[in-house]
Every structure is written in C-alpha cells, then in structure tokens.
Image (cartoon, rainbow, N blue to C red; front, side, top):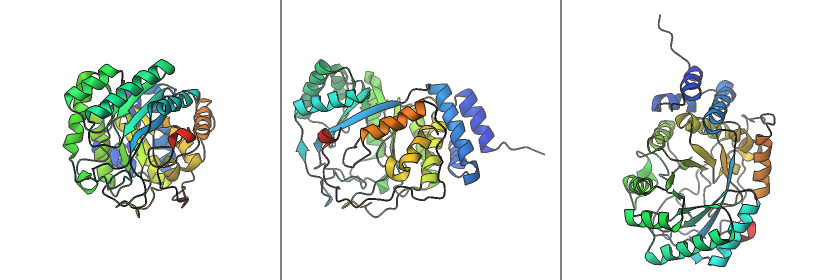
Length: 357
C-alpha cells in the first residue's frame, strides 16, 4: 500500500525544511485546504518565512508622480485613460516628493517607491525621476525603487545609474489569465522588462492581484511563474474593485481564501520578500492583516496605495510591531466572508499621498 503524503507534510518537508518552492499541483492543494487545516498551513508558511527570511518585517511608502491618463486598459485600474473612472492625470513636483520621502522615513519605512501610470517612460519622465532620486538621496536615508512601466534595456541601465535600487513591474496574474485583464500589451512584454531589470543589476519586484476572476488553478500557476523569475520582492494585492473600471462589480476576496493565497505564495517562494499591498485591509481586515503577517507575509506597504486608500500608516506600524513582539496569533475569523465591507465613501477619486503619509 502506497502512503501518500498530505499537503501539510509536503509543505513542512519541502518548503520549511529544505527551502524549496512547492510545485503547481502542490500549491493548488494549499489553496484548497479545508478550514480545519488553514491555521496549520498558515503556521508552516510563517515558520518557513522565519527560517528562510528572518524575523524582520519591512515597511514601504509609495508615491505616484503621474496619476491617471494611462494609455493601457488594465481592467482593475482606475488610472487607465480608457475608462470612465474618477482618477485624472496630475504630476507632483520634486519638493513634494522629497517631503513625502521624509515623512515615509519617519514612520520607520526603509523603502520609498516612485510610481508613474505610463506604458513606458519617455526621456522627460526619466529626467524627472532622476531629479527626484538625487533630491531624495540628498535629504533622507531611504532606499528608492521605481515603477514606470515597460523599459528598454537602455532605460533600465539609466535608472540603475541614477540610483534606483529596485524596479517594480507586476505580471499582475498568470500567463493564461492575463488576456482577461489586459489587451493593450502582453504578459511576455512585461516579463521582458523584468529580464532587462535583472540584467542591469537592479532588484526585481514583481507581484500581482488576487481576485480578478482567475481560478484557483490559475492562482497556483501564477505563484509558480513568479517563483521562476526569482524576484527579490513580491507585492501581493487583493482586488479593490474601482468604480468605472471593468472589474467594478467583482466581489471581494473572502478572508480565508486570501490567507490560503498568502500561504501558497510563501510556500512557492520560501526566501522571497512577500509584501502586502493594495486591498489587504478589504480582503483581510485588521485582524487578518496581522494573521497574514503570521502566515507567510513579511512586508507591508504602509498608508495609502496608488489610487486607493489603505489604513493609516500608524495602524500598519502597530500591526507590524505586534507581530515582531511575537504576540498571540490573531483569531482568523474564518466564518466572516468577506471581512472587509467595502466602504462607499466616494473616495474613488485621486487620493493625495502627500497629505496622508
């Protein structure tokens, strides 16, 4: 009689003990674990994170220098100029960027990300980013990352020379589901940019969004595809349906499903920085965010995101502090689906990062 190992045993032996990522079939099993095993698989993911990443939790601030008016049609995004959503194109000036970086550093964040909603940067935008990086480096000690769309190899080299340490370019979803999300460019185009970034010596930051209509099989596929590009960091977003976008009416990701996804991504990439990003407070709620940090994640974007409101930076810091102090595992509230009740506050409009950081 052949004894088949349970997914709990496989995760413990492969990811926790050996530091090897689970394969697609195994990750699908993680995404399908019953509620009775969720806490156990989350704990294995947490122990894997502690063993292969260490105990530290990273906090990052984020700012957009060009918001709205993007020519791409990413169906989840209110920055597209192709949808009737309330974000409109604006640019922020260098002193404001420096002030935002200083405020971000005061919260204890170690990284500051400059983002522009463009398909790819032109020379003028790269000049502006170069000025911003120089000014921020003069004023504050913080690592700078950028997210400016697709790059040529020459543009990647230029950003590296300017002092950008990391580049964010999300694949967003699995290769098989991508055409349902974006039609104005391909998954392969995005991956090419990531290859250029790695070639010039910048760190790769690449993640995506959970809950855009993909199947659990495609979620497992996505985790494996991310693992293959060996990113330094993976931002994990949960869909926050934006008014005026094609995904406006999609349901929120239930908390238990979100926690399974966090565990699966950690078990796919034992030593990668896994960062909570947009929609975390909606899918997980306050207690769930801490549960996620005790269930595989080890980084967080504090405060607001690009076009959506997050929690106050102080609440994120408090959550991180409680996790670092080794507090009791928060209750997972598995019966509450979804935890985050979407607030119709009317703030689907452009948020002002400067005021909120």
